[in-house]
Structures are given as C-alpha cells and as structure tokens.
Length: 81
Image (cartoon, rainbow, N blue to C red; front, side, top):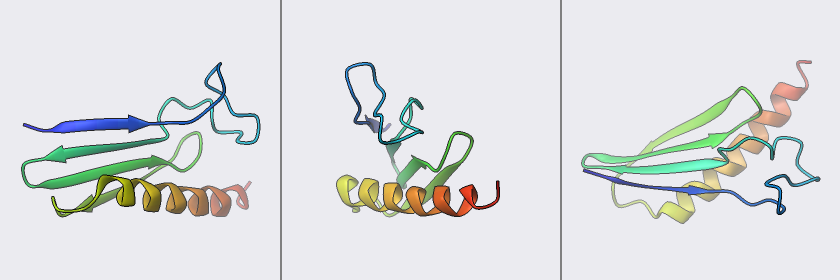
C-alpha cells in the first residue's frame, strides 16, 4: 500500500503568469511505497526529475529539493533551444 500527495500553486485558473510552465498539471508528486518514497517534479513541459528516497524522508523536504532541481534542469534545457 501507499499514499500520494500532489502539490501545485497557481492563480484561480491554475496558471501563474510568472511561470511559463505553470499550465502543466503536475508540479510535483510524492508517492510513499512500502520500500521507500518516489518523488517527481516538473522540469519543463516535456521533462521531469525523479528521486528515490528512504521511507524516513520528510515529504516537504523532498518536494522542495525536487522543485529546486527541476528549476535548474529547466534552465539548463532552455539554453539548448
């Protein structure tokens, strides 16, 4: 068994004008499984970063780190355009 939580912040229409990728439905996702935790965060419209962690990890800390990493990856990928 497991549990999951999805987080996202945006305006009333679900889009934040400061973030061009805020239209994506998935900002981050943390799934708690019997053997550990899987975290996923958006790194652009077609990219995600994924982390595997021990089951003792704090979900908020994992989410914050994933979002920060996703932002850095998004910035690096934008330079390839």
